[in-house]
Image (tube, rainbow, N blue to C red):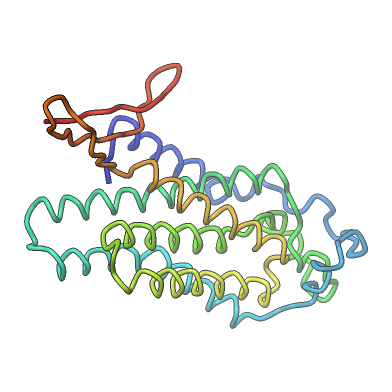
Length: 258
């Protein structure tokens, strides 16, 4: 990974700040726009099947899996560096860059999810259920259904970690199992949000698609590419192609040596 601190640090900090909005200003959000008058007949058939789901156990397990999805990429990446390298300063610096990229994935995912939730204001499934206490149906969180943050976070971190593992071990037979296990755990997290009655199917599906996109794109933009380039006299040039940003635009930067 290649990190441009002057760009990536402000992006990461700013994204986390945006993501904190629902927690810092919860009382001002106002809840679902339809209040206690939300009509489940206005919900499409697929999502309507979720109304009435209520499982505190599923909600608790999904919360636990969400926390695990944030932590295990860091732990596994550190174990990987410790077990498969000579444990030099450069090796641990590489882990540090990996960890920063994972943090940037998390922050960008959180910021985008927050912006969309606040812009859409979709009522959660339990807001349509008259058996749920009115206080809960009228809560600020009741209008933040689309799209699922649990789903997008789990899939973004699973994808980012799997991508980093694949880059570190491109010929390892463990690449496919790592992808399958990571994405499978993310799918379980998303499914439990439906069972818990916290999200509709379209919420978690959208969250999964967005999460995979962020989890793949951010590490890809940080990837250090080494390309063999023919040189005069029959030699070769080792070149790095990196994304570049500057005021008013961006592009790519190519650096190499003979």
